[in-house]
Image (cartoon, rainbow over all chains, first blue to last red):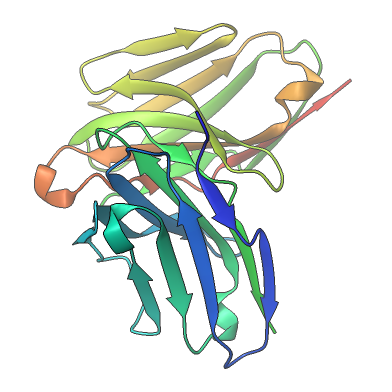
Length: 112
Length: 115
């Protein structure tokens, strides 16, 4: 079984640019989560999809962040425009039943 | 609001010594608690999951205990090896369905096992 795949693994962009992160969950996993870790802080929840619907987006920091999950398969997280404080590692996780998580390797985003 | 704390933030031990990692949480209304391992540049690997009704879980050299009433969990790693060097994270899932399945993480303990 393939794991959760995230790409790119690293992204360096300038402040004000747009970046799109992608997550491919394990096939058949209805639940998909985005988390991020900024420097020196804990990993924080961003949002939760059940299939294509946003179940909980309470962790999204502001309206510069837009997440989509077309057709309930892969998900994208777009940051537009990126700010310096958006730098960090963005993790995606998927789950079949909602409690056993498989995490991807993360995307390290650096905004300069 | 749930808060998860891990102490110490970093730990260095000689090979062969037992590791004791601590995790505390402020709200005892949890569904389960998980311990993860993260290697540099890698994702999170789930090590042990303890349901709120359980007191401990074991897997090989790893043993995790849970005392929900006092808001504490401890991860024991017996006879540490250099390959155990990593960051260890604990995370809790809230009990209330309305709170969703989102994990609340601690800051992690960075472990170095010296040969």
